[in-house]
Image 1 (cartoon, rainbow over the protein chains, first blue to last red):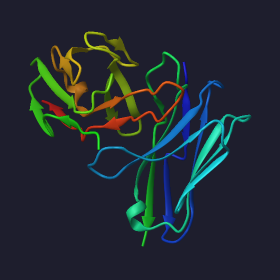
Image 2: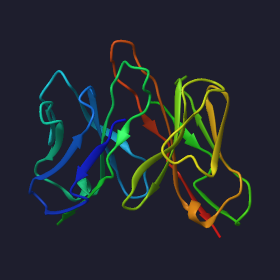
Image 3: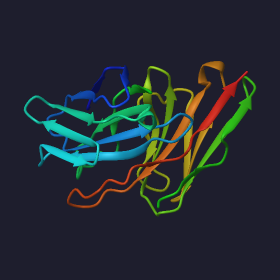
Image 4: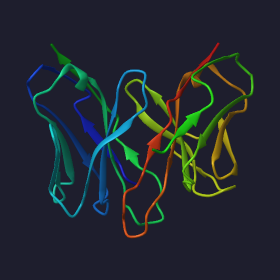
Length: 114
Length: 116
């Protein structure tokens, strides 16, 4: 089955700096890669996703890049703000198959210091 | 928006009790999931269901069972609660569009279970 490794487990940055979280996956057939943000005491929520037919996707201050050859994808947050502080999870799945479940990384605790 | 509702936000149960955690979704999703979340271990899949009365084991099913009698409701059962089952439990639901459309994976707010 799929295995997703996520690094780093914790990340501390100053407000205004950039933050990068990296994930690698094992199943080269996986074709959908979402990222979830979980604020303290709240549910994980989808913030951005990317499909294997594109290499990069942006949404305001966040972007995700995908390198299919190396089987890794990354979340980039620019101009970080204190409200970006949260746990971030990456995930992977082969969509369109009989596989129904996302495989998650173990999460990254991002702290943005004012 | 899809709503995934978990019946309890906090629960405290005694060792050996039978515990039911309930999850209801309102968007006719076929798939439902139960995860537990522990610090440093991320989200670990306990069980999932892709149809009414269908269930499959996830990565850590030991000590748990599930029930899905109706499409909108997925219950997690701890047959005899133990202290090592103290955790945050998250329910999720999803649908899969033919051709690889948006997956729609949505989480509930979680139930923090403490077993004493």
